[in-house]
Image (cartoon, rainbow, N blue to C red; front, top):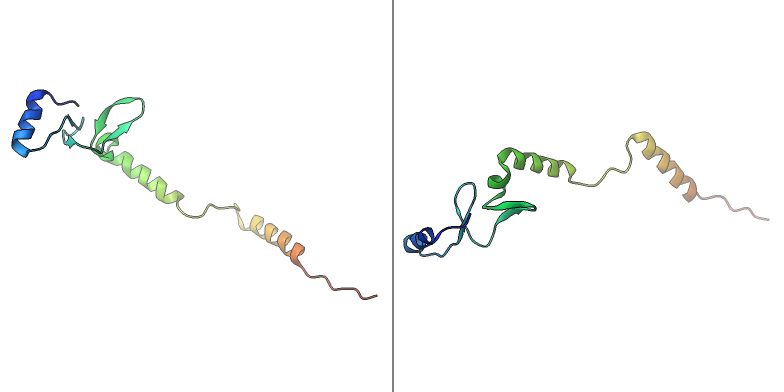
Length: 98
């Protein structure tokens, strides 16, 4: 939220800093870093203020679950089929001498 002239002057006198805006939820002063959402008005000081603690925890859990190498085969049988296809192509065949 935008601070009015009285609030800006009070902050400048008390803390010696110049600030124009504050977090819409908790009221902390905003400087360079702001959390916003596309298509929605408002600016927040952190992800927790913007979304809430439960939403942040859920998003973090999904990110951790997706981490790592993606699975190519759904089960062991499909992995074995692919292995056998590759091994047949790489097998050495004996040379026939004429």
